[in-house]
Length: 252
Image (tube, rainbow, N blue to C red):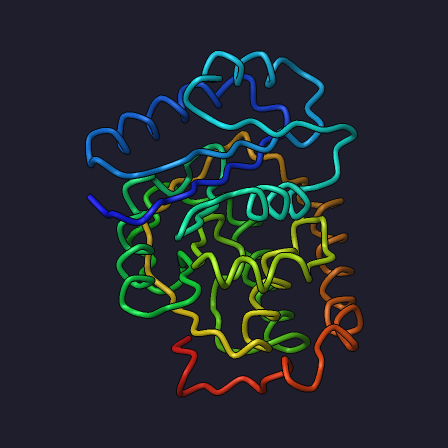
């Protein structure tokens, strides 16, 4: 379909029950549409049989595995920096955003975006299976904190479906320091500081009740991480690199 090499990065942690099914769907999709692709699965210190499940696909995917568990941000960073694709997309292992939505990311990147992110906020009718009300409330509250303390202009930083040009990935991810779930906010903050063009697209989304996110522990850590992001990157950019965000350039 697209002559560019597409890298799909999938961070996994204790996903033995669903990773094989997800990989089968992804492989079938890529073959059907004649993509040039690579699939990079990063096993973030799983303690179950995830690695054994991944080994069943050893001829079709690249597996990176390490211990101990470091966090989703660390896994995505590892995958992005080991990928070779012209376009690099990361997706949650549960495929809450179906793989066919990758067309939207690729289209925007081919039209000039450096970063394209899936969003559940642009068209809520595409949310086919909602989270429990308390998780949706916590998500909306988190986004208000993002806008108040880190950056404005993005209504859904946490959807686990984001695409990058190779250049954008290689600029952003070596600079990331957040290993937890707030890493999404950090990468978008860095993209804006680098003056990269960010696009948002509405995507179909299905809640998976088997989420690994603990609503109390992980939410508390995410809020703490938010307050670290600006401080962590106060000296990240040289004078030449640090580019103030231009809303006319970054279409968010």
